[in-house]
Image 1 (cartoon, rainbow, N blue to C red):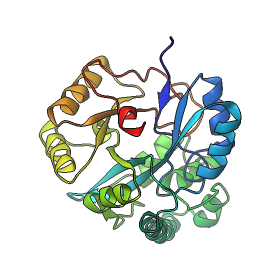
Image 2 (cartoon, rainbow, N blue to C red; image 1 turned 180 degrees about the vertical axis):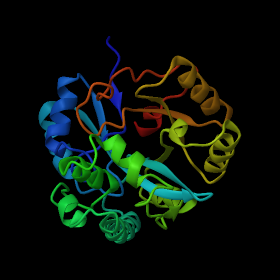
Image 3 (cartoon, helix red, strand yellow; image 1 turned 30 degrees about the vertical axis):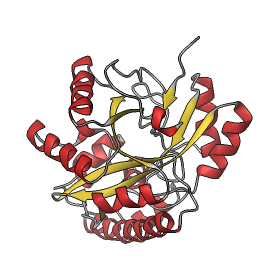
Image 4 (spheres, rainbow, N blue to C red; image 1 turned 60 degrees about the vertical axis):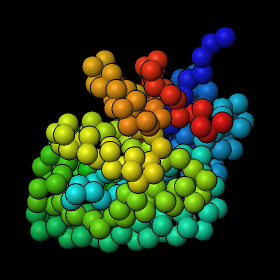
Length: 276
């Protein structure tokens, strides 16, 4: 029997992806994915549409969300999986996060105007289906010719320490975990090796995440080396965390694809065993 292909971290136009929830699921089907989670940033607006398409195409669909949190003055992402999307506590938390994101978007627009980019909020809003994110500003900066690609937009304007970066007061990690659990879901530390910190700090983050009740860690992701995946597998075992897999797909490109090479090392317990 062929093993199932899982992808438990993906984005649609409900946050900063470029494919609608329907288009995302259709692409997942084309890639042979059997189990998909849509994990938009602080939004569950795309779940109903994605689930309907998944049912039509015979894909098992898992409710997901990627919650922005703050830890030690750093932005950390916590993925929630398998929760009840009608949970009042989780819904209230995501509403608060949306308000925070909106205020941040307006502040970014003010900073962009100071460096000569006018009507940035309106331009980014036209590229967004929901809340405006830094990714939408990056796409707008490409559109108007300020930069040649989105990576350059972040490097020049939008990343921490750059002229148009705005820090947000996101929820803390324990609150995110608590709300995911109250909704019946599992909390996963997203893409640990993407945070710019030493292994010592990363292990502290993972240890505290576990102490606060975290359930899993993303072990398999896009663009990893074998050594990186084995390191994450070792930490998952060391901290008794379940292993998750996710491409963090946002848009079609050459280096990130839904479901591509998302295998788990044998010593890691898959998170889907706890989702079953």
